[in-house]
Image 1: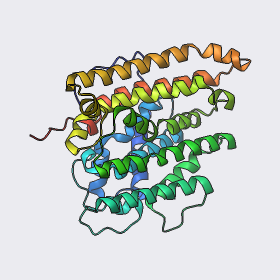
Image 2: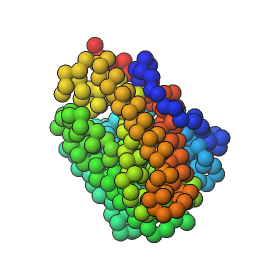
Image 3: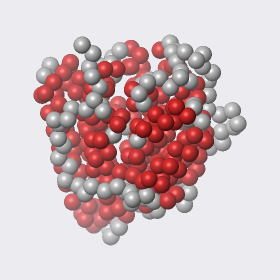
Length: 347
């Protein structure tokens, strides 16, 4: 990542003290789930520390709650890398050509290479299997794709103790996340670099923050009342947190994305608006700063939202804290994560 880019994130830096134990649990879960094939793949995954972001994003969680957060974050990263066709970029080389076949349950010829159209069809089919599980609640059978079976395990644990209302709105967030991937996959296959506005719209869906904020309610054992959750005030807070994390991520991943020919907001500004690289980086960093400022303003206005709702709503402060934890947590984890180490650009 560009080490000369600094972000202003005036929020408390925290991490769960239960991180080492949860990391060990998570690696055992990944092995048992079949999401990775072979000890070499597991070793490379462990060295990436991608699931450690759970301890930063959910610093108040411990025990079984943090285990769920680790497992779901690990699942998200593995699925995203499967869809985006760049698992090797994160984990230092091809993992014997069998990763994709393990994730989506389809046979692999061992070469590690599939035509773009076939990979796209496989990814969209996997999305649909996951959506069907969310919509219809069908339990994966013995032959289910590892990604579907692993998600079913996480989704079952995620819903424990939560209301039917929470399950419905959280299922909607997961479906929206999954439905955003076909557009991203199609653009990747067609070699399209979306303009900045289109890129940001797509990233808001596929960054996965909305279901993670629902997971924060589950890990914290509370629920935001529906009228408050549906309010434009909290929706604005979610968007601000999402945009702050997206902007930081685009900077963290710039060299990696550029080396692999993947869309990135910095590159989009350079192509579509003619910005020089340093100018584009400053603009994306500015997006992160403005988004954090917007979040802070909205958090400061929660007392008025409580009055509008007719009384004290203690869950609002906890929900705002979950946003703050993810903004600051992503900042802290992303600056040191091995998966964002500098990639030397060709030429």
